[in-house]
Image 1: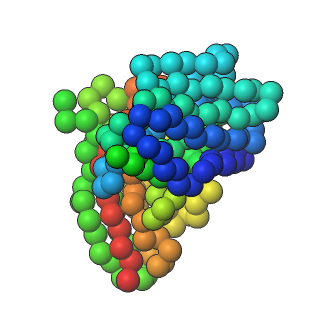
Image 2 (image 1 turned 90 degrees about the vertical axis):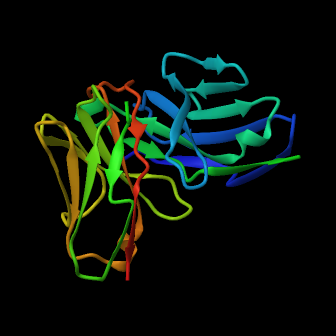
Length: 114
Length: 114
């Protein structure tokens, strides 16, 4: 089955700086890659996603890049703000053979230092 | 729209007991997925229900079973509870089973097994 590795496990950046979280996946048939943000005690919420036929997608301060050949994708957050502090999860999805569940990475705890 | 709701919020059980968790999907959604999130880990896919049938199953034993009702709500049942079953159980709903359909998560049920 699919395996998703996520790094780093903890990332501390100064407010206003950029943050980058990286993920790799194992199954080349995966074709959808969402990113979820989970604040302490709250539900995971989708912040951005990318399909396998797209190399990059941007939404205001958040961007995601995908390298299908290398099987890795990254989340980029620019001009970080205190409210960006949370745990971020990458995930991969493969829809072949009726399979539809998300495979998640272990998460990155992003800490924004004032 | 109340979004995805889950009950109960918290639950404490002892080893060997059985538990039932409930999920109501977001309005307009007909597909429900269940995930287990251990402390400090990413969610792990348990199974997905669509049209009252289990479509796909992750790497979980038969002690984990589920059901979907005609109104699309769903139940997760866990038999013969083990200490290792202690986790946050998340339900996610989506509008159909398309690979690019966003999964909306509920707040989760925190299960503690003593």
